[in-house]
Structure formats: C-alpha cells, structure tokens
Image 1 (cartoon, rainbow, N blue to C red):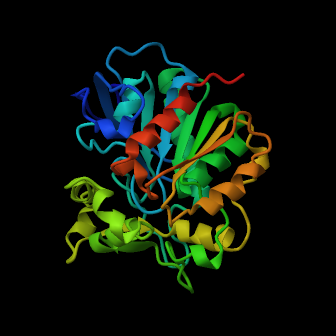
Image 2 (image 1 turned 45 degrees about the vertical axis):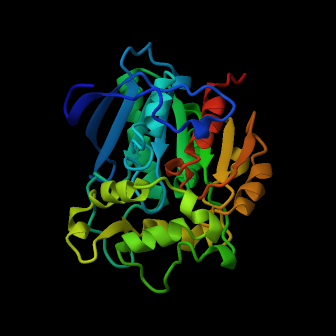
Amino acid sequence: MAGPGTIARRSVLAAPAALPAAAFVGTAAAQPAGVVMDEMLIPGPDGAQLYLRNKRPEAAAPARPDRTILCVHGATYPASTGFDLPLSGVSWMDYMAGRGFDVWCLDLAGYGRSTRPAGEAGRPPTNGEAAVAQIGAALAHIRQARGVAKCGLIGWSWGTTLVSRLAQDNPALVDRLVLYAPLWLRDPASRGAVPVPEGPLQPYRTVTRAQARERWLAGVPAERRGGLLPPGWYEYWADATFATDPEGSRQVPSVLRAPNGVLQDLREYWDAGKPFYDPAKITVPALLVLGEWDRDTPPAMATTLFPLLTSSPGKRLVMLAEGTHSIMLERNRGALFQAVQVFLEEAFA
C-alpha cells in the first residue's frame, strides 16, 4: 500500500518447514509461500500516530471481510513483536497470510512504534475508552484501504476486552472475534500477575527483561520450563520488544515502558467486579482460546465468560495443552495457529 504514512514495503518468503513439525501433529503444515508486508503510521483520534503493519499474500485475491483480520495486543507488549515475530522464520501473521488472509496488527498509543503520549499523574494514557477509539481508527483505515465493510478481530489478553467492546458497540463492523487469553473479572488470587498500586497512577510503568521472563514462566511446572521455549526464542523476542522503546533501552538495566491506562481499567472495571463490556451483546461468532498454564488470565476466566456469550452464534472455547499466556511465542504455538485458523476459515450463517 503506497501513500502518505507508509513506512516501508518488502516481500518475505517463509520456508515450508519454518514451523517445527511437532507443532502440527496430525495435520499437514500449510505455510505461507510469498507474503508482502507494509508498515504505516496513521493518525489516531487523540493526536497520536498509530503504527499499523500489514501482511498479505503476494498474489492477493480481491478483499473479503471474512479474510481481513486486525490483531490487537495486551497490557504490556506491542502487537508487532508478538503477532509478527518470525520465530524459525515465520510469524503468526505470516501463517495467516499464507492461508490467504489479509492480516493487520496495531500498536496502541504508548506501545511499540506508535507515539508515546506524555500523560500525567492520575490520568495515564491509553485506557480502555481511548484504546477502543484507536482500534476504531485502525478499522476505518483498513475498511477504506480494502473496500470492505467489516473485518475479523483478534485480541490478546487486555486486547480481548477492547475488541469485545468495539464489537458490542459496532456489530456491523466486525465479522468475528478471537479472544486469545481472555481477561474477565479478577479475584484477589488472580491480581498478582498485573498488580494495581494504590494512589494516583503514573503515566507509565516499566518492566525489565528479568521480570518479563519470570512472569512468562510463572504458571509452568518447574520440570517443564526448560522445554517451553526453543533455544534463543526468548532472547529474540526480548531484543525485538525492548528495542521498540529507545528511551527505556538506555536505562541500566534496560526496561520497557507501558502505559498505565490498562491499570486504570483494571481498577475501575475488572478488579471492581464491573465488566468493560456486556458479553450478552456480542452478536458475532466468538472463539475463546488459551493455554492451560496461563496465570495472567487463568482458565477460570474463560470458563466463566463463555456461558455469558449468549448471543454469539457458533461460539467455542479451546484450551491448549502446555502453553502459557504467551503460547503464540512458544514451542506449541502451532496448536494455537491451527485452532484459530479453523475458526477463521469456517463459514457462519
């Protein structure tokens, strides 16, 4: 896609054997052949410049709403180094593009390559309301660029609440929802993963590489931790992710800054017993999917949320063995890719 705001364009070739065969036990591995990538900055509703990345087949077919996807990240890490990190040569976005999908990911304001609002004490940037408006701006850009009336949404963690709220308020814009590691009401036992401090919230919080790794492995049995990530995968992810914050990278030890708007959401909604959206008002097909070792959004959240989606046709819940909150970046990520792809390719009446 050429035009104002475009950062770069390049083609990437994903090898057929890029994902470990073990990740696709029982089925043939369908890998992307030739995938085109575009990057761009678009204006956000609050003045921030929002980073969008697109992956699609090099020989793209005409745009279709059910083959157009926007991916939204969670509370701490950007979408661009999660959904599109080419581990063993292929990312989740590459995988979807290789199946004929036009896939986009958005870094919300304050994350990744989007601009970082200053914020102020007591009013941190990018809370839920602001984030939903930013997702709306990204959807408007995609709809105009592709000439489609709607598209599918994939949310990760906190991002599941944002895409659900958007789908609740704008059902005509959404084809279907994937809620990967869905967040729901937090009881005291589940608040340790992302604690909310007392008093006025500062604009940003920081996380070190060591803290990120400790949180990642928190729910994994000690004897299984060594096999969760192939050698070098964590370091590759950390290098890519922390590099998106040049100011944080200059600190010793290096840190990644993340907006505290999510903590405001947790305080006002999820820790207060008040959902940010009404599941009964979700009228599009929805998939809930998570790993069994997820401590950030444990399985009890998904099993509580699932029966509340009373108006979602074709809803389903999938729990994946031997995966954490970040299973899309782990050895068993192929199971996640497959489970979501089956849902994305299904025809719903």
